[in-house]
Length: 108
Ligand code: HEC
Image 1 (cartoon, rainbow, N blue to C red):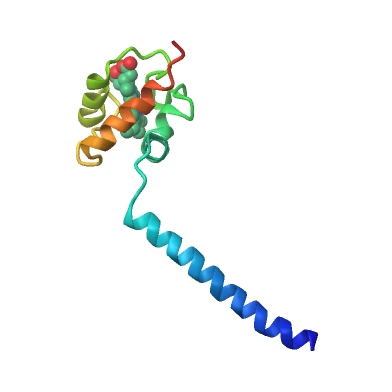
Image 2 (image 1 turned 180 degrees about the vertical axis):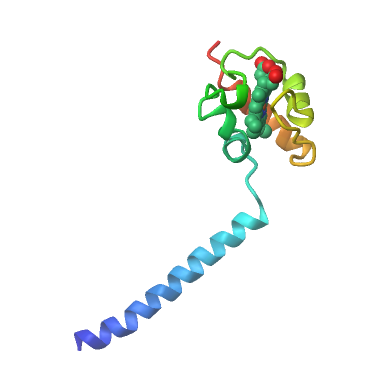
C-alpha cells in the first residue's frame, strides 16, 4: 500500500516541479529584468570587481570616480583605453540603469 502511494506521488511531484520551473523560465525570458546589478555582473565585474575596486587591466576605481552620468554613459558606449566599447550591447534605458549602478559604488 505504502509503495503504491509513493509510486504515484513521486512522478506527480516531478511534473508539478517541471510546470512550475517551466513557467518561471518563460516569465524571465519574456520580460528580462533590467537591473544595474545583473548588467554589471555580466559585463563589468570581470574588470571592475564586485565593489568597483578590482582594477583589472587598469580599470579605474569606481568608488572614487567623479564622472557625471552623461560621461559614464558615454564611456560605456565608446570605451576608453583598455575598456572596450559596448556601443551595441545596451539600450538607452540599460545605459542609464548601469550609470546609476556605477554611481552607487561611491562613498561620498
Ligand atoms: C576589459 C576590462 C573592462 C571592462 C569589461 C569594463 N571596464 Fe570600465 N574601465 C576599464 C578601464 C581600463 C578603465 C580606465 C580607462 C582609462 O581611463 O584609461 C575603465 C574606466 C571606467 C569608468 C571611468 C571611471 C573614471 O572615473 O574615469 C567607468 C565609469 C567604467 N569603467 C564603467 C564600466 C562599466 C559600467 C562597465 C560595464 C558595462 C565596464 N566599465 C566594463 C576596464 C573595463
